[in-house]
Amino acid sequence: RGGTNAPAGSGYTKIYSTGGAFAALKTDGSIAAWGDSDSGGTSPSGSGYAKIYSTWQAFAAIKIDGSITTWGDSNSGGIIPAPNITNVAGANQIAIVGLAITDITFGNSAGAIASCTVAPTLPAGLSIDSATCTISGTPTKMRALNIYTVTAKDAKDNTGSASFSLTVNVLAPNLANATDQVATIGSAITNITFNNSGGAIASCTAAPTLPAGLSINSTTCTISGTPTEVKASTLYTITATNATGQTATATVNLTTLLIVPAPATL
Image (tube, rainbow, N blue to C red; front, top):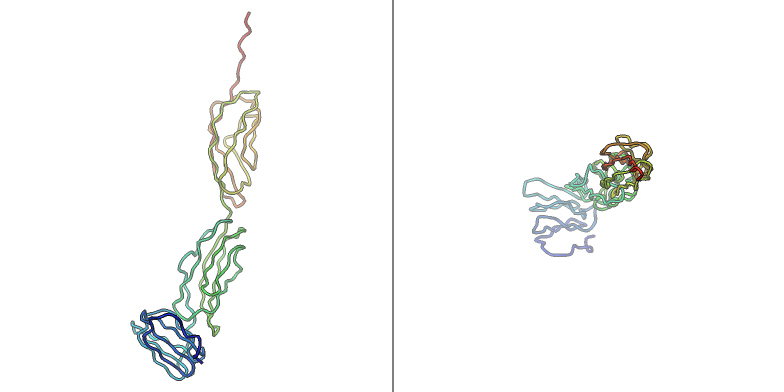
């Protein structure tokens, strides 16, 4: 009972005890406790503590701001506060498949955390740290907007919780403009291609309507064919759309001409 598992390090100023545990006060105002958890062997979180008092099976610590924290056997005055977690960073974000999320972290202003869980199940590729409640990873599948609840539990099964929202989308397409072209009626054009540095394309459209004889590939956005219609120089806008409806656009200027052969020499 308190004879082992003493904290390492230095900076301790005074040690207090119950019948089965010790609590050491540090210069930074934090407390390290060890021994029988029922006798106060579980450290309270936070800092700012100025003095500790003890009974046979419980501790009470007073803070500089005048507040009091107790822990140990409830019948001896020691009520171990439940964890009190709040989101610190990363909440309510829109993540992208294949890219690491911003870690979702939580601060705890009360009792020590023994375990952390989250519900509903996180998107594939993400996980929760069972000791800190931090959520991290790289999502591998899409997931619609959802509200997740993280529950922190202490050694006595007291709990505290916090919520956050998360959406996982696929990466949007990102098209580059194509090289302008002047085509000739009756001759196949040089395929007009658009470099995509973003996510997968589900469909492609062109506006306004392409000259007769030309078409656009619905998944690569490549324009090809043999024009049969004369059209003045026109700026076409190509729109690429992914599976979740995200879009990207690019442009190309295209002219189709009718070349009249020169008359034969007499």
